[in-house]
Image (cartoon, rainbow, N blue to C red; front, side):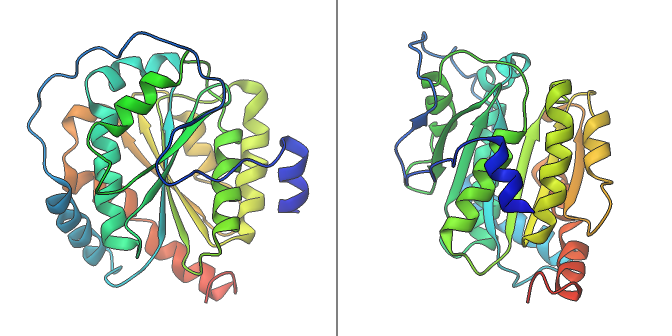
Length: 258
């Protein structure tokens, strides 16, 4: 079912390379607006905070391949300009260092299509999200399915034996003609050991509540972030990992995960 659904939506999506930017349709654009200086926690301290949240949720010692999916629709511009998205990337890297044995985070940027991909790791993370975003050109509408497909393709090609933990950020519902395909793809992905942790910025969250309640094994979580500036590191990690443990228990009981 999953293979048929993936092939019906689009051609196979190449897996992200380790560091170069891969852009679907690069368009020259002016440099991004300067990012204001903001006090932030370094990745090593973020790793400690992520590990503490995992332990509180009964996930100490659990391994997973961490992915990050970032919304580049037009309404997201301010969150790139003020550094919110760069810091979310650093938070995802901290989580990866607590969960993933390679400490790398494949990143997918999406709007109307899959805009581009990169990989975050300790040697290249500083300013990386802003740098890649600035190279990817026009910010489009909101369509989830190509980004979801890109993560599934990458995970299946990676040969990973650990489950995937996908941190999927957006500030809005997808276009109406993309909603059923999104639900169908996430439902088909229940066959795979993949957990999708949706983070919704702002108030357009009705669709995210819908995908968090799809029938079958619960492979999705949802954490609402009305104001990204008001959510601390510990609260974010607690929120995005809270439903991961119950998913792992259900996936093992169903034979999806050993």
